[in-house]
Length: 142
Image (cartoon, rainbow, N blue to C red; front, side, top):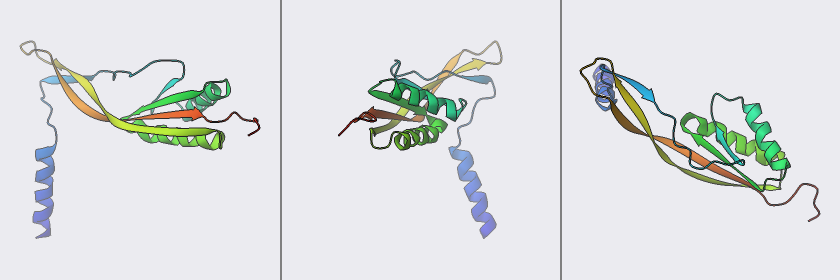
């Protein structure tokens, strides 16, 4: 009885899993960047966490009123951790505003044989946008 349940679960997973055609190579495009600026930081899993934290601290200490962190997919957790670390470092002088959503990401399908055409597929990826803004300056009398 238990073996039948395990087999049924495996069959269900196989039906719902996206099957890629063996005739195409998938090339992932870079996602579209929403806005660009000096105070906008895109968080990735590949960049060193300490370097990203230092960059954000430098922006806030040099007089930026707000910074915006963007994370996509697997970098969402790192983006949240970075925002929380900044809140601890600038205790009481910064506030955080969080927005989540999804982003359409396009993959190019390159044919492995000459008789097929190029194609594209769209997939959805989770995203987070964290706005960190100063409410008071450090050392200012309140």
